[in-house]
Image 1 (cartoon, rainbow, N blue to C red):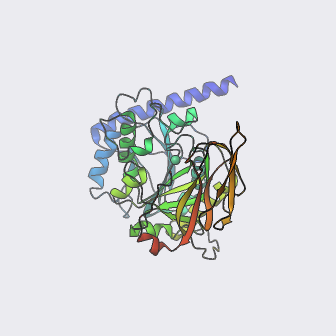
Image 2 (cartoon, rainbow, N blue to C red):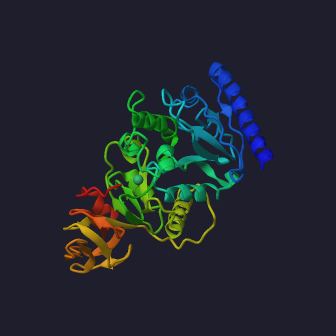
Image 3 (cartoon, protein in one colour):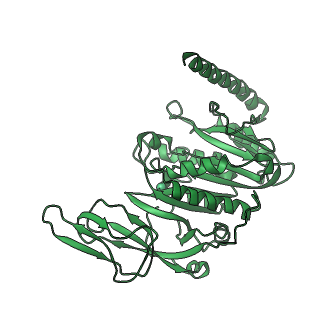
Length: 402
Ligand SMILES: [Zn+2]
């Protein structure tokens, strides 16, 4: 046991020396480090982050138009490392500046296919308590053979390590990272992290899936949130087999919004509830992402899909009128009629009870788990089936709490 530990420490130390040595030469010669081809299934220490300024310069010289990996000859350089064709590797991202001594580098997994093509990015746990996405990224990444991939896949399983370690949605300064993109190099901790992630990783993406869960003890049916008024985004959503797709224009500060502003089609994938690992919902999301990879021409498993189509919804929330203990009569995914009983809220002190009646006909695509609620708490998110084209013509009337 002890000798295992010592050899692990030695391995880390050697990795550190190698990466430091290569880093100083790369700064002089403006050459990227060739990332080691690493079987992602292998257990190995995470490499030391390469100072990020280098990656920007190299990238600017090699790919002035930013078309990373799009042509046969172009280099795929990210986080100061060049990824060779048909290889996969683990890199590390950390924020520059004053906080770097205290920050923990976040692992970034990269797979470069043998054939040039698009780069798909997946980010998870931007909110540190949203765990389902971490497992979704793992399952997608570890099921790819690099030599059979067209294009590239970048996966960051835990963006907000600070929140993750504390089981919290927020950064250690209580800020919500998903309100600060694309960030500011000289701003708050959240703003600096957002800036660094956006400029070091996100701008390499040709499309982005940012994975979240419900917040405040609400659970979501696996669903895509997308601004369907953007044609490239609408087209992207069509690849997600039978997934529920909701029209929702992201707000400024969100990663999805910032990516779209940069011309990168981006969607939010909402899966389940925070602080839980939900196998059935994870499986459904992974299957949908694998379908997207097939539709994008990036990875074929020769599955017979039967061409299932996504289902498009507009949506609205039904709120509680009183405070008390919420008990639901309905399950996530159920269809409800207007006038149907959704649940009850009972005051634990007075024993007074009230019913929550559906004012809409549709499907429960998100709902609060049983808990103590206050008046006005958004308890049931009802999806009303529509078409993508119709939804693209409307503004959604309520923020669905990403
Ligand atoms: Zn979230």
